[in-house]
Image 1 (cartoon, rainbow, N blue to C red):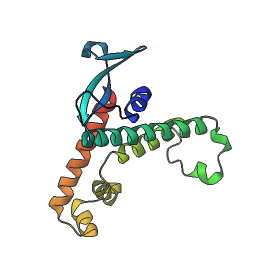
Image 2 (cartoon, rainbow, N blue to C red):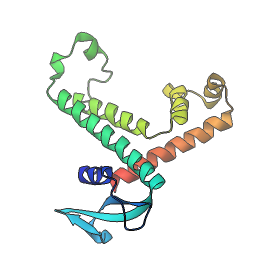
Image 3 (cartoon, rainbow, N blue to C red):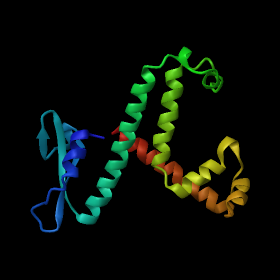
Image 4 (tube, rainbow, N blue to C red):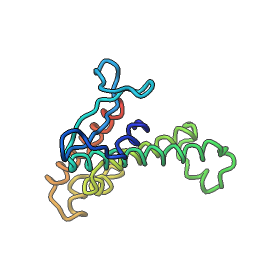
Length: 167
């Protein structure tokens, strides 16, 4: 998430067309940006208020997730693994994996899960630890077909998020 784009969009600037608002989307130089702020390039589009609200809510969620992750990483970066309590050290399953990788994986999963619809997260939780679709369906009181569809939606949500953050 581009911090400047987030703050520009937060201002909810009116567009030339009545009832429309400007939305700044970060882009690369080859994308033919509409505006530059220092080294940052943006495409500016006019969107309706409903579209602006939806886009800004997505921006807000991503912005807050990233900042939560960064704050946690700063806190953990100052913790030596030897300073952990015995219980915290025992929670580590594989001693071969460096501590910072475990922390990164945990928070990467947390950020990804935040981008999956709640109903699909419940299915993922029911399927945790290699559960069967039939068992998850029984636990949640739904059909196995629903479980299968929810898993596909969750995978698409993860793929969409990964694609969005990698571009």
